[in-house]
Amino acid sequence: MDGTSALIAKKTLIVGAVLMLLSVILGAIGSHAVKEIYPEYFHSYQTGVYYQTLHALAILWLGVLIHLKFIHWGKYILALFIIGILLFSGSLYLYTLSGGIKSFIHITPWGGFTFIVTWIIVIIDIAKGGMSA
Image (cartoon, rainbow, N blue to C red):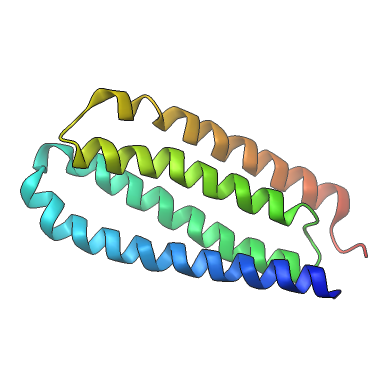
């Protein structure tokens, strides 16, 4: 593995681990504080944590795929996953913690769309290139 790919794989794994850590922290905060303060929005908050967790795991998986050279567009896929988490989960967190300000919830579908596009790119990248130098 060349130095650039190794560095991208390492950074991707670190980002995935940090996002997983934040998922656990946000989940714990949600189970205690958010559930008490904003019970009517708790489901939205949980959905944000769930999708953040899923995509943080996907980022960890992406780091492994970059390391194994199954993925060549890794840094772009990483950026799109992060954007998706910020738009989808971030908007749900803001919606919940703002007490239900509707403008935040209108951002959520853009995050979902970003996830869909990112997964399509992952499929294309693996199908076209996997394991080539």
